[in-house]
Length: 181
Image (tube, rainbow, N blue to C red; front, top):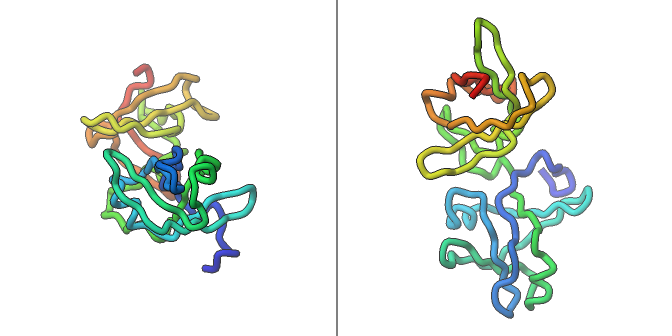
């Protein structure tokens, strides 16, 4: 796949530049990976600018406290680094490590419809708008969607007793969850 043939749907969001670090152009990065180290293991990186995908050459990176700092080719002072605040860093979906069966990347779950069985019929609770990491277990945040039972936001624990099955092809998650909860 050439860079020119890439499209946004080929990418996954891996991190976001949160600001400058120091005076030599280093950047703080908020990662969406399991650990800062796993972010550094990914490549190549891209940023989306309008309808174009631009390569981002991360020259160096290191864990700093609970976060990550990186240097990017062509960024050599604090003012250039500050201009990049908020830039999202994407990687190719195909570059991510393959997961075991029944494991999913959060990005695969965002946007999926969530359905429960209630009084003998399927009830659409909404769609996954984001996922929260709470420490004890992850939580699916559901927003209303076309055809959902109501317009409420729901928080559904992402645990085996609640999440019954996931079908990425059908873009659906089946849960054991009461529509009034």
